[in-house]
Length: 494
Ligand code: GLU
Image 1 (cartoon, helix red, strand yellow):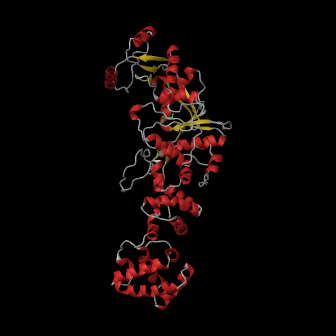
Image 2: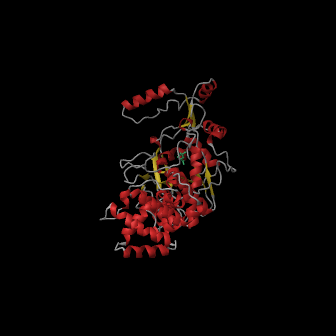
Image 3: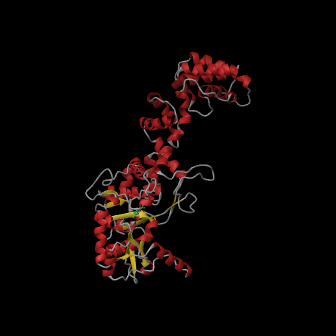
């Protein structure tokens, strides 16, 4: 394992089959960190050769998700670059040129077997208790016969001619050497019958032509490395450094993290897509910091790190090969820390769209005063609406009058308390300091505990028991609105 000092060229190469998952986002993040650290290039390549699994919503979601996380790519869609096109379906001519090289050199061969024949072969293998696979029926076809049949228009795929003996070894930057016996490897399809390459062929040609120096990808791709390395060897190309990143497990640590967002047995829907984390109000800074630590660590203790620190400190040597379990509580904890560290103006601006989405018509000026009152209380930005909604309505929606009643009292006790409070609220300076002092004094003179006076006031003006600190809330609401709401409560109590 060598330390990287020269600028890398790394790529994130998603297939546009679904939304940006945190697993993919982590790969992209590690690519980005490595590129930034070494002054290299982070390339985004869309591996869209599997038309059957193509999902038109995927690419916009991928681009938006990467942008949300601030993982800006140097080359790729919407950016261009010297190594394009960056969509594989726009590179089909390139693959045709390179497959011809392999066919001419005898490292690949046309296979004319029909789907029916392949199904039959598999059936027989099953009976013989063998794994499904191809029996290499066309491997030794005479090249001139192969050419003749192709020219006659017979349908074919192109397969890799995997050596029948020996083994192949991958030097993985995270896992060390991994050796596979060639006899266990299939003569994998490189070009499908419609002339479109498979992932295995396109990925190798593109990584080579795009001068990729380091391939970071999920552990689930380890089984593909023998095919890829054989291709590098047959072409006589130097392979990139491979680093297979650890699996991300579900929070229980049993099994892979879900690929989908489904309702869990506890009734909650746990996010796995970047856009859902965004909608819930996770800050990109917090998500990036958390994601970096899913499989990598700087030391045994440092957890909260800025983007700049992550860039400076990231290294493949400290990526852990063992699977890492996702931890929603830890992410929540990180998010709370990042929210508390935001300047008020910044947090206010980030809250506005969440309030709008909740149907709250908040003005920035008022919200700027409220934000410091709730900053400590937020885990995610979408927690904010119930803390602030009552500031931005004329009249409160109706609430349960029993909430006005302090412990060990009855509804009949409330009007007197509110009347006393009303006199103070009508006459005191309307600053939180003055309100605090005078309302306490009023409670005292009535022989009430402070809370016995504050609860009816809070419920009358906020419509709920849980709300931001009372005196600051009163000050922001202003005398007029506060008195109106006290009066309204008194009316309802009659
Ligand atoms: N297109 C593959 C995917 O969707 C990329 C695998 C690789 O990085 O080689 O995961």
